[in-house]
Length: 346
Image 1 (cartoon, rainbow, N blue to C red):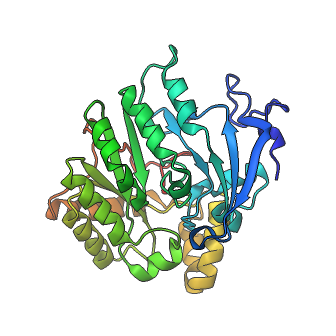
Image 2 (cartoon, rainbow, N blue to C red):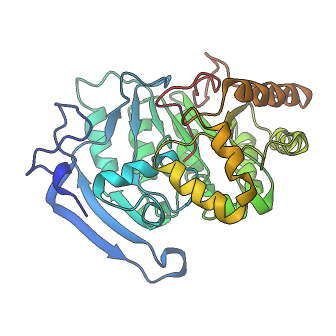
Image 3 (tube, helix red, strand yellow):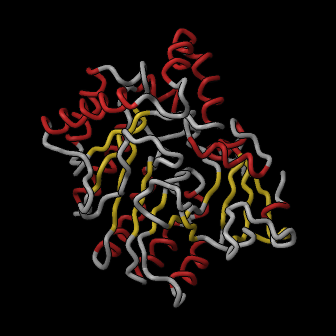
């Protein structure tokens, strides 16, 4: 594994931020495996990070500027995850390695508390779950999020969380406390309700209905929760009947909003997804090659069609898309305007 370009000793600076020249010290990596059913086959690389609040690149189309990512790699194993490319920075495999080699920033809560207390910090919105899921399986063991949420609560710092993980309900009391003093946005990712599709494309995640139970529970405790309906997967999850079933289930969960995003395939994710497609749906390979011939994003006409269909269904079922200025939402960009850093699934 290539840690050298990320360490203090090398002066490594993969983010290009001169104020943050290294992620951790070379002697600060501990590798562990656990012989329990939920962690079998997974290797954890525990590090003591030097920084935890990350600035979003200036060219990004994201409507927020700062993120916190306590993990790198994700056992959710979603075959389309755009973050797979980041594993190549460590000379780790972007396929199975991304699913099973998890970097854990064990000092994330204390580091965040220190950074929030800095005189230079202006209390800006912090987004979580926009790279990999902060409520993936590892969180059950490392329990970093309670300390992170507590730090944000104590500094009344606005934040949002995007997740597929039901483990977020463990932190319900903390989220309620935070919501009492600052803006808290929670969004759950549910792109489809087709169980056969879920089992193959998102094998490490809770079932879609379990995720909608999270929406139901949060809403029942007075915490507004939207749904990021993503990804809508062309030719596998975009049939009008599938879209209707998903929006109907989202509405029944009590979601305050639904925002559709069509699958996009960046380098790193594209290769892994196309390999999966060739194995499970070989007849669709040529159609995908044509649809994504211009790059990582589906054509605008296709994105607009899906967005229009979902919004019409949402209006029919009494919910609507996230709009700028709405409180307690995870902000997402317009799905029809391709850009290099469009928000995506975990």
